[in-house]
Image 1 (cartoon, rainbow, N blue to C red):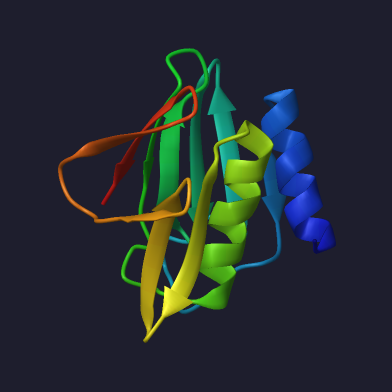
Image 2 (image 1 turned 180 degrees about the vertical axis):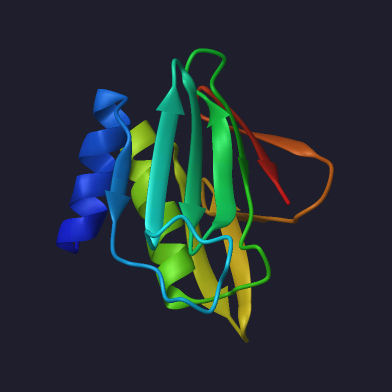
Length: 125
């Protein structure tokens, strides 16, 4: 696991905000950070290059995830680190330039449905 991913896992488990990397100037609304995990109480938001790839609540154990139309190795890596930090038995991989989500080894489809991964209610956008 990369150091940044370990930092994400530690931040999630501690319930603290985390920021890393610098943003390039081509995005006028950029936060200044490549990775931006923020906690407001039990509510969290994880942004990668200012795209919200995950948001949820640690108290109600609900999370919504998305690749934000960027099926990259970095997106999958960050989502997998977030899942590890929250102890969600879910994995993300890339197949044929498309992100594939699996829960307990079974592929799930993006859409309006909720899936249950351990104690977590997961929605994949």
